Image: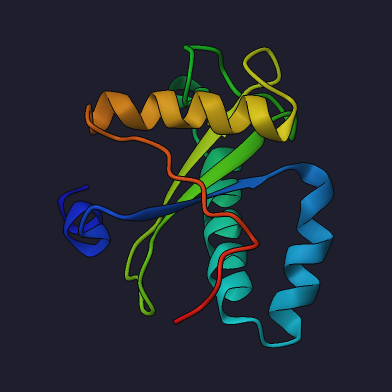
Length: 131
């Protein structure tokens, strides 16, 4: 966590990955999209850890104490907003806590606020110009 905190330098990108998003992420990664490659690696690692968790240490929802079952959860992946992030943080959100992109983002942001109490969401409009 300390390395992630230093790597982020206070700015994170939060990506919500619903089950239906995975094919598009993989396709973009295959076509060379650097951010999609990072996201695909993080999603793969999170899924591997969740699925390989021993029964007595089953993975829990990042928002509530429910055990994650099967593939019935969404992932929210926090990535340091820099060109070369060395770490990422994935939170699994169970279907009771959220199924829509908005619900998962809200629950993940609340969970991140337990780690970093001063966290706040900043939305950048797609209509903004570039310097």
